[in-house]
Image 1 (cartoon, rainbow, N blue to C red):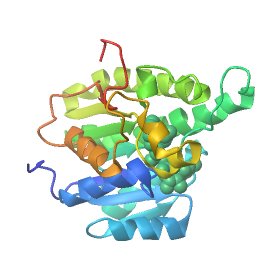
Image 2 (image 1 turned 45 degrees about the vertical axis):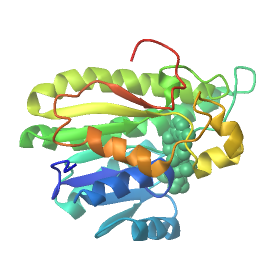
Image 3 (image 1 turned 60 degrees about the horizontal axis):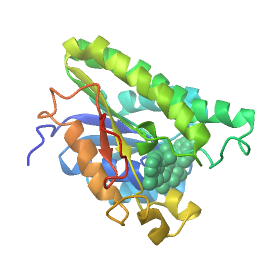
Image 4 (image 1 turned 180 degrees about the vertical axis):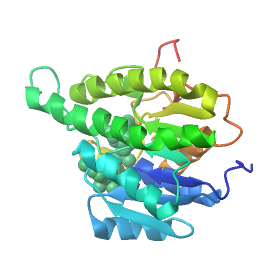
Length: 247
Ligand code: NAD
């Protein structure tokens, strides 16, 4: 399916591996010119080599929200515009109520909420002026069904999800959509550091892990021309993990 976005431009945060890289690959395969960021220049270069076409690789540490702003500013300078913004970052370390220090909440907020808001504050105003834009935030199934051992992450992402929902309505009339892609267990570096593949697959009734490239295809669809009437929503990509009725 032609997504109708060939020739557009995208900034994909933390596109150096995993779900971000899958998203950057899918957008580039549809003819989008892509900028990615990550902390490690060597890793960024390796990721860029996996993505079709010319890729703008920008070093940024998103644990500092100002670097989220700077990433999008540099992407706009390098690509000429950012039509599509995919917000993403690393994930906070695991922890429950007793094991989560107070500073961990601030760190999770900075990396998984405030950095995303900074990116949106740079990217969305020019999208509104041009009358076309797509924002897709990579968040988590934990937004729909909080994950007990990822307490700080769940708290930060709930805040971001409110920001996305409210912003989506404010910018809707200008042709800008704001959505999130909510992953359940995908087999990435992050997950492989916490558990083995079989364990990760047990989180959902399919008993398997999702693949980053498939996830990226779903993100690319949310950023497509055809998705112009989809806004303010969160798409679960979780193999049926979340059990609630409200989507
Ligand atoms: P990953 O660790 O495999 O890849 C993340 C990429 O971002 C890596 O290249 C990493 O080096 C980079 N990165 C990490 N911290 C960064 C920082 N501070 N600044 C810039 N770049 C940074 O992770 P993933 O599995 O692709 O997850 C992406 C996001 O999705 C995370 O926030 C994660 O918590 C969330 N998530 C993932 C899953 C899953 O199953 N993989 C499920 C739910 C939510």
